[in-house]
Amino acid sequence: MANLVWERYPFLSENQHGRSWLVLLGNLGRADATLDAYARALSNYFGFCLGLGVKPETATLEHVSLYVRHLDGDTQNGETSHRRSNATMQQYLTAVRLWYDHLVYQDIRGSNPVPRGTYLSTPVRSSDYHPGFARGLIRRLKLLPAIPSEEDWKKLIETVAQESLRNRLMFALAYYGALRREELVNLRVTDFDFAHRLIRIRPETTKSGTARVVCYAAIAGKALSEYLIYRHRIDQHAGLVFISESHRNAGQPISKWTWSKIVEGLAKQAGVEGFSTHSLRHLRLTHLAQAGWKLHELSAYAGHRNPQTTLMYLHLSGTDLLSRMTEAICYADAKIDAALFAKME
Image 1 (spheres, rainbow, N blue to C red):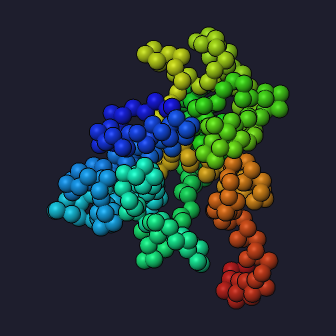
Image 2: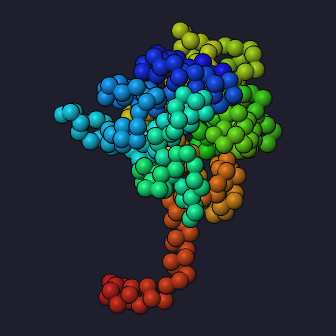
């Protein structure tokens, strides 16, 4: 069971059914990141229901629709809420729908007020199916991830170069391995194949629950050896690789939140906006796509269960788009170039 800090989710901690559901998921081995995401979503929803004067267990589709407006930043009772991104709205509604599924299963209520969307041509009729919401309550938008420009990437590298060996190494390994923050902070010494510069990502630390192998550069390998010697002086146990260097928490594992704060601080110091721990993953996969990696190679390296998720990096790199355009209409483009720019030669 994950050790959720209930104080972080004030409205959830007061709800018996919300807490019991998360405890159940924890007992079943759900990832810490999943439990945290569900807890934040439910706490937000319970707080909204409290403002409406409605018990979450008895909320209706109408109440859920008001919650969608709230997430979208609409003004209610003279107050404007913080507008969430489409991805956050989808995540919050998914957690709420799954919680209501649990209540229905437990016979606490008869139906789920959050319709389950489907993209099937002939939708499966279930207890929570609503013909008016076959695509879900809100439209799902698919955006390309933001990655830094070459100039911003250079600024970041220069800033990180002034950091401690641990922070430089974490930054490099996160980039080389296209690692999620949970995967990075949960690396163990035994996960490394030092001879071949490989890292085995254990399935229990991944989002998909699938193990994979990534690699890192030779210079980073030397830095890793140096860091492990330093680490051994603080903690002689072969546990998690990255540990705290502060006097207060010396030897304690680095949390994903600490790593996020470190990266956000570095980005702010470098003057690069919108950069997060996940940006390193996006950037590495984009660079691999630009280097000519095939779709199946990128999917395996990223640990994606669905290759469709990996396609965005091919689009983001522009490599496939540029080559196809060049091959398809090079003759037409040559005529336009000759007509418009011939006098410049």
